[in-house]
Image 1 (tube, rainbow, N blue to C red):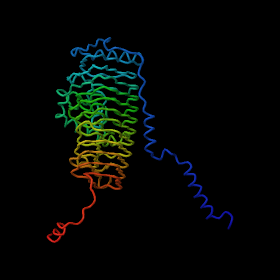
Image 2 (cartoon, helix red, strand yellow):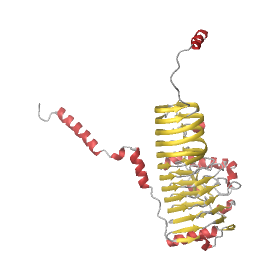
Image 3 (spheres, rainbow, N blue to C red):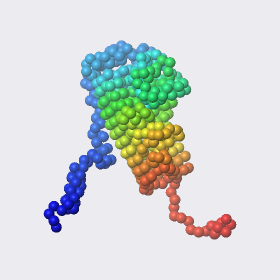
Image 4 (cartoon, one colour):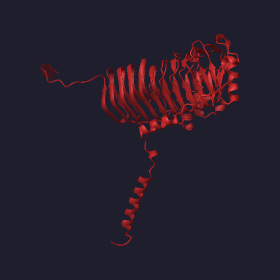
Length: 468
């Protein structure tokens, strides 16, 4: 063999290159669900509660259900800011607020058992407008009833109640908001500067009960949320969030329970849902603006929850920045649900849904048990969503009155890599429906009831052959 043979040299270069690639390949490039789950839990840390304690009564609040306590909360928040942080204790009583509470950094709002905050219905009390978002579009709108913007270390805790009392106020605007909804979407598509998207007086976009916008280190624990004008708890562009042990009694239109949007590192656990809309709806912006923002909702754990409402866990439909790394496990139902797991998008959205893991979910009677659609509302074009890597294990459902399992991709963007194992839907009108889907793996899946051994030929079979 000749020294320095070109062929031998080429082979050595190839081997060396492969070895180096194997040696230096970063493990972070490999998605491992168990490791990702543990990493999320390590990343989510509830804020340390402040040692300094203030009583709202010392600022002039009276829990007599009549006195306007908004000025007292404003003074308490200002004092908290001056102290660099404090726990504001709200003792037993009914506290009326003619307008919103604007939180400050390093505050803990501690609603003791028997304490109830309830809000007035005069829209002008929620002005001036604040920077907000409505159905996936950034804009300025009436202030959410409890609002935090660009804050750190926020806690709302205790066995008390936050009651929007919106059924006979803002909630009635649900029938009046079509024009403003359309206008907000036009501004989204046109790229209108957010500072020019001014809603408020003369408009009818309902505010949220609680919105935390660009906040870090959040704890929402044990409180009950009631009668919201719109979404109950909106976690917008926020991170490091723990929502634990809260309860809901919210039956107005669009009374979603928890909406993480453009948010990351979120733990939702031991929650008792009772909502007339989605229990958890994971979102990430709408259409053009969502794609431009490019901030996915990611690293979200939902565990040990009890669902009751319209849908248990939803991803979409506003999810144009993408949603990834979602874990739902060890949850059951506490009453009626229309759907269990619902992933929805359409060809206006773009973005992606991937790396979703569902394990040990128990449902009762639903309309649909597990539903994926890329064609929500049969509208849109040009921006199909990439939906893939969805894993479902240990799902039990008593009955699906419409369909057990539905997977609907789009003609030019198929839903793919869906893995279902140990699924038992005892009864279903339609067991399984799939279109525009590929690499769908079923392992020990029952949808619509068990089938025993095949029957042997009978005399009636032979007679029917002759007859037909």
